[in-house]
Length: 414
Image (cartoon, rainbow, N blue to C red; front, side, top):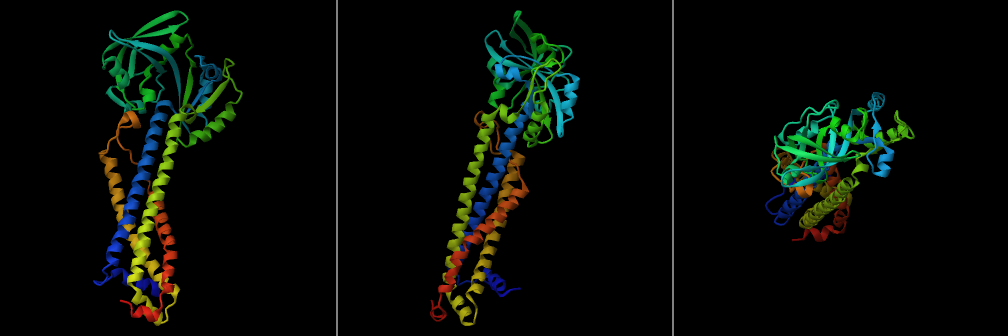
């Protein structure tokens, strides 16, 4: 054990005569602890919020879409032939978890009292309804089909409230086609709520068979093919590979295909989420500055109060470097104690919110009705290491104050 480390341990114990250093140490410890709590909670909240919103958007619209490039360029409803050959090619892509056909048709829902323009998303028996089932507030997801019409519809809670509909109610839908206005009568089978306004305001789910009949399309023709990857981060990587694979390729009817990621389809949402990273960096910088400031103040007070001890050590032959190391080791102990307290409080708060959802949000503004938390122990460890290194680093300069203390004068210092 080095002399500096030993004396720092003894100095940590303190004594009753430390009238000023004890409060300073408590303040420094509290500053580090508070800073770490705020940093842990901020990082966990931002990560949880970004991933919760990202999963909502991806769960509703998948990770990638393959569609007819002419339909995207002209904004018209032009089909893509998603036959078994194309579906097998897409499913064979690395890290692709699921592939599903989707047809879309705009129409109007009408009740006796009101009407509303919506988008009908036609899905079939191969549609992954896991996310939709998690978002249900009433009813159950019907067995959608590509071969027959069940005349059942799944509405969002917002649409249901506007039209004053509930599960079991009948509602008419009107569609405009080449053959004129075509009505359909649906039964409300379920009501969902994602709290993502972009989806909840416009989207209903019905059988793909019904949408294809309204368009006059064949059974294998779709508006687009949705692809789900194993991990969200793989979507951009997969998009590059998919774009190269399908570049200039056509379906069985000669229609040129294109691939888009969920980020490209909803750039406004993901740009907003990226802005949250700036807030995190600002919070981290402020909290590290708070911790560093309280530690510098505490170290200066301790050095001034221990002037006699410094003079005595110098008179006994101790070098300035050795004495500086004493106070730096002491600072490490104080920062370590603050980190320990901060970790306990921060993680307890995070896990409590994760389990209870006690802190709520306005879903109209934040797309979610509670503060989401995602605890990543690697990032928590990184925050601890970064805080310790920064606090100790900024204390190197103040520690040079010991070199200006003269042994003869400091021993007589009161």
